[in-house]
Length: 97
Image (tube, rainbow, N blue to C red; front, side, top):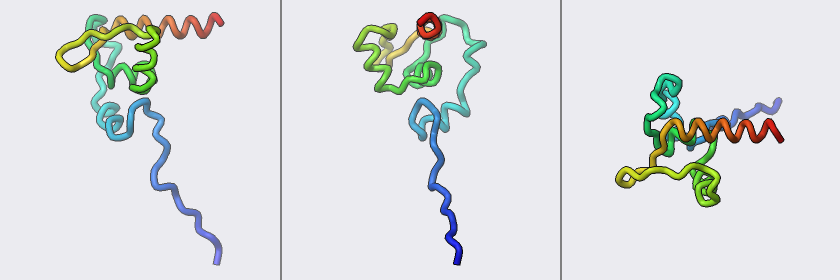
């Protein structure tokens, strides 16, 4: 009897946030190109836009290499402008060596 290949139980998740959160975020994610630059975004959105996990984001905050968030109650928020500027600076730094 030939051996049957078993399909993996789940596929690899390439989303920058955990799989339970990613399913809801990717389906309801706003069009960030249409948001005003002063829009405030939370940790989940920052993770999606930068590709950094929460742990990596916290490490960069501790190093001082990522813009500090504002506090709104218990939530940490960034302006979309801050995050976009950081992404541009990281990209330019990588391209310039």
